[in-house]
Amino acid sequence: MARLQKWLASTPNRTFVVYPVALVLVEVAIRGGHLTLNWWAVPLLVWGYLQYRLTGGYRRRIGGGGPGTAVAPVHLVSSGLYRFTRNPMYLGHLIFLLGLALVLRSWAGLALFIVQAAWFHRRVLRDESRLKGLFGQDYADYMRRVPRWIPAVG
Image 1: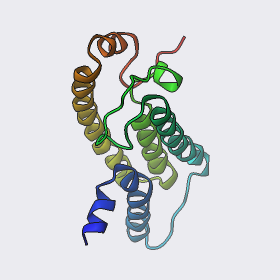
Image 2: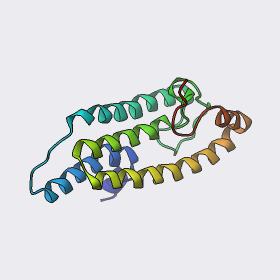
Image 3: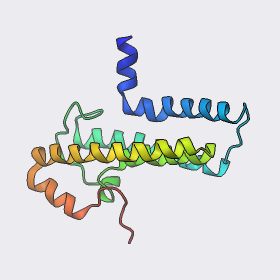
Image 4: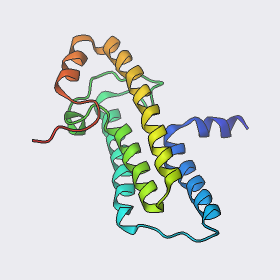
């Protein structure tokens, strides 16, 4: 039981395994066993997952620490996708969840996306406080240069 609880406590396990399975089951139950999928939205699933996965590997390679927030990074990462958004990994989760809602044509999926966006935003605020403590003025400068969520275009 403790192993299962630990596994479920992992945000990536919830986002990329538990939520998709749960939403499919909910939608199958609601629709009497019939799902109509928006295949055009599948690229959002792939994009979100790959953005999370590849950016996470990059962050660990360049900044150290992780996975997750239990082990603090040693270096501030401000290159790669981190040049454009301070939270590309969390943004990958949200892109995936939005894609899931669109693929399944699911109002429950849209509600999950909204709840998770709020949850990630609160988590980001805690992360920013921790990172300011770790990296001081360098992180404050980074915060001024790079948007929290949506990359600047141009």
